[in-house]
Length: 226
Image (cartoon, rainbow, N blue to C red):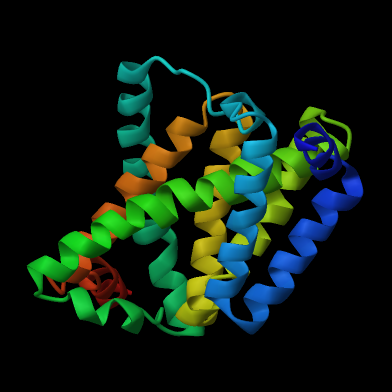
């Protein structure tokens, strides 16, 4: 039974259906859609007899992986938050971060949110969107560099759309972040740990700025010079 479930979830029809159903549920309720997708991933992980290699989750060299994660997260912050986001907000409107208002100035809420972020965003989202959706879609399309890039773009669009609660600017910005993460995974497809760490460190920067109520300092400064 375990092997049959594993083989079924690897089939093109199962991969496409899992993406479509997850996307549909997310459009109705973000949490329900996310946890449905996560359930599919956990079942796949279980049915594979917990083979991390099915997601690119292998045993990396931790020192260079951690150093790369810090570098990529800094570059991601520079590219998206400093060079791109201010212009998106000028023409489309500010990103809606009201969902994070509870952590502003509250150290306990900040620590709890950091913990939840590492579990459900850094690990959970990378396990789902890159480790499963992007990887499986690339494989069923032919498992070539071209199909990996096609999958990277498609899943990045999906990743941006699931953040609809941040408004249009938030969806575009998150989609760009997702694309950057997907391209990193494209080049490091056997090291999902790098994506998890990069995602987590990048989100910690943003969450910390929100905690200090300083998340708009750079954006407002850049917009003020234009």
